[in-house]
Image (cartoon, rainbow, N blue to C red; front, top):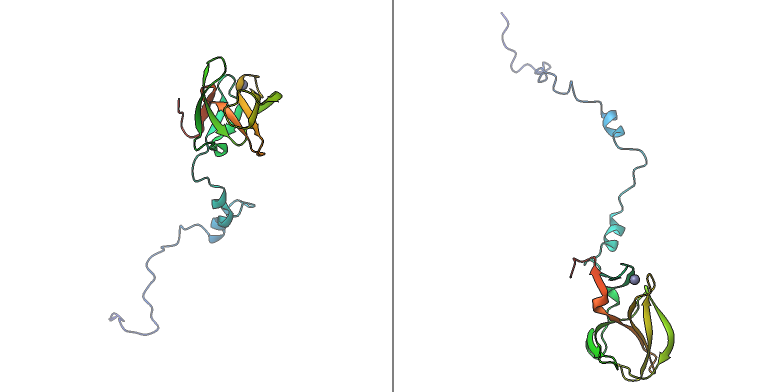
Length: 161
Ligand SMILES: [Zn+2]
């Protein structure tokens, strides 16, 4: 009786079942994003990402943060210096431009200095008062710290002990 109306215009093929019957309403999907979520600002995020982990130097006695590797500097072409005090005691010191966790005490002494025309005074840990090194003040106007490396611990970029 009925011939399959294969090519009858105006008689669309039935839609393939109910494919979207169980899909959630579109409005629910939109609401799944929490209101007030911070907008991503891709432009400013990369600037704060440090290329390398910063290492911090802590007081070995009390772990007070003394300075960071970013403050390392060279004097006489080297960061580390092996020096003797007038009593023959050997120190291995490193030179730093600044050391926020170290406080200089006493007057500057021009004698027995390890850096020509630089006076020194004692530097103590701001946390526990341990002797951490010396602050040098030079006639040239240069100023820097010489910190006793064995009295410090390095952290932040992998323990170097
Ligand atoms: Zn300390």
